[in-house]
Image (cartoon, rainbow, N blue to C red):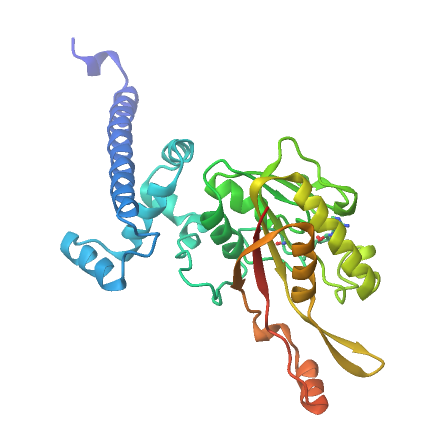
Length: 324
Ligand SMILES: C[S@@+](CC[C@H](N)C(=O)[O-])C[C@H]1O[C@@H](n2cnc3c(N)ncnc32)[C@H](O)[C@@H]1O
């Protein structure tokens, strides 16, 4: 008696499909493994450290007969932690499906080599829609340069949670706080009363609300007056200093403001003044990175007013990187 006589035709087909699926799964896993191996080779040869010029990359692609997207997939797979890699292999039915998930497709930006970072844009895969949301590439590039895998990161003024999403992507541990948390993975905390810590942090990203953003955030010392803003910053910098490890890093994002008092335009350089406060507290400036604002943040009325009043609109914004 043949097997076909015993089983129904459908049983027979199901079994063939199952066997074919397991062969394909092995084959796909092998593709992931090989891509990762190539990615690691590329990374070990100094790709992220800027040792590859565009002509090197082009020659590599030409000689191997691969396309740019495949190259990017290799590098991204090469960068994943062991856990992240196992997750990618188990979760996605194919390399194509993995690469096509929106966040990964967009995550393949190059870490900046120079300290003016002007091309970064908001990406809806990172952080919630939130006033003053930070483009995730700024936080990701800072973490790339100043932390290692599994470093402990804090964001004491986390807003829409961009830092949390970046840390999850590149395998950093994170605690995020806000006086008015926008999502459940942000802990409620007033930075002026201290920053919960146990153990101390390797890295803090601090993106405070500026005095003139009065109406965007909950009212407190930061936005009552310019004087109270500086007092709040002094306390905050002190609290950050307390919860950082020795030689830990604070990245402080600030911009100067134009204040309109009684019809007069005044330049208020929050960046320079807060820098002086940070130095008094004992922080040592190790890098200044310019992350300019887009001119689109100004509307037509702002432009008309500036022209009429004969003053320039500000697009300067900096990240000051300090070591404890
Ligand atoms: C510029 S936003 C941060 C945006 C964030 N980087 C992002 O990508 O969404 C500043 C945040 O500070 C928070 N904040 C204001 N005063 C605070 C305080 N005293 N303690 C903690 N957070 C505060 C505001 O609620 C706001 O979410």
